[in-house]
Amino acid sequence: MTKFCLYLPERSYSAMEKGIVFSIEEFAIHDGPGIRTTVFLKGCPLRCAWCHNPEGMAFAPQILKKKNGAEETCGERVSPRELAGRLLRNERIFRMNEGGVTFTGGEPLAQPQFLFETMALLKGRVHIALETSAHAPPEIFRRAAELADLILIDCKSCDPEIHKKFTGVGNARILENLKYLCGSGAEFVARVPLIPSVNDTRENMSKLSEILRGAKSLRRVELLRYNKIAGAKYYMLGKTYSPGFDANKTPEIWDEFTKNGIPFIVL
Image 1: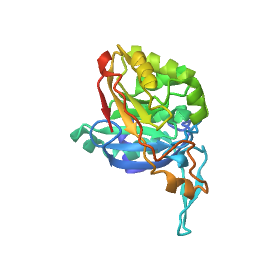
Image 2: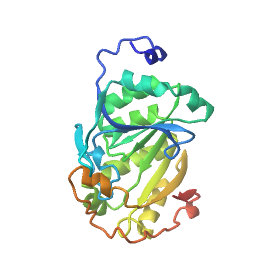
Image 3: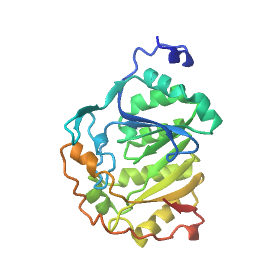
Image 4: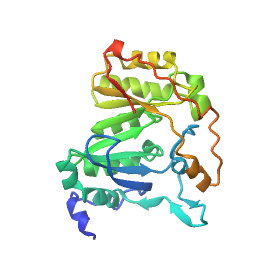
C-alpha cells in the first residue's frame, strides 16, 4: 500500500472500475477557482471541429509520434483509489489557495462509474469541478451535479443542425441537461467556445441567454475565443487539422446576456 492511500476512507475498493486518464496537470488556474489539479479523462462521443484535445477522443490508450520520431503512450489505466490518492497529496495546497480538482477530457461523463467513484473519494476533502459537454444520459448528468461543487458546462450551439454538423451529435440531450442545471441550484459556469462563422452569432447568444435567464446558481457566462493551438496534436496522431471553418477569422462577440442580468466575460 502506498503512503497516500492512508488519506482514504476505510472500505474495500476491489470492485472499483479502472478508468483511463491521459493527462494530469498540477497548479492549473483556469478551470475553476484557486490553484487546481486538472485531470483529463480519455474518450469522447463528440467530434468537435475545433477540438483542442484530439488525443482525448479515443477511449483506448494511443501512441503519439512526435516530429523528432520519438513516441509516447497517451492514456494510463488507474483505479479511483490510485487517482484519488495522487490528487489528495495536494490537499493542503488546495485548502491554502481555495483550489481543488477539475475533471475534464475528452468527456469525463463517458467514464461515469470511474468518475463518480473518484469524486466520492474526494467529496468533502477538496473542491470538485467538472467540465463537460453535458452529452450524457440525464441520470448520469444529475449524479455528476450532485457530486461536483461546480459544473463548467460547454454550450456550443443552440441550433441542432449546426451542433450536429460541427460536433457529430445533436444537442437535444445537452439542452435538456442544461435546463435541468438552471433549475437545480447546482453552481455552474456556462462556457461558449466562440467559433468564427459557426456559433458566434447574435441569434445563438440570444437563445442561450433566454435558456440561462433566471438560473438559480449561474456564476457567469464565459466566452472563449477560438485559437489554433491544436494543430501539432493532430500531427502527433497522424491526422491533418482541417476544421471546416475559417480558422483565421476573428469571432464576433455579442452581448445578449446583460439584458437578462447575466454576468459574462470574454477570455
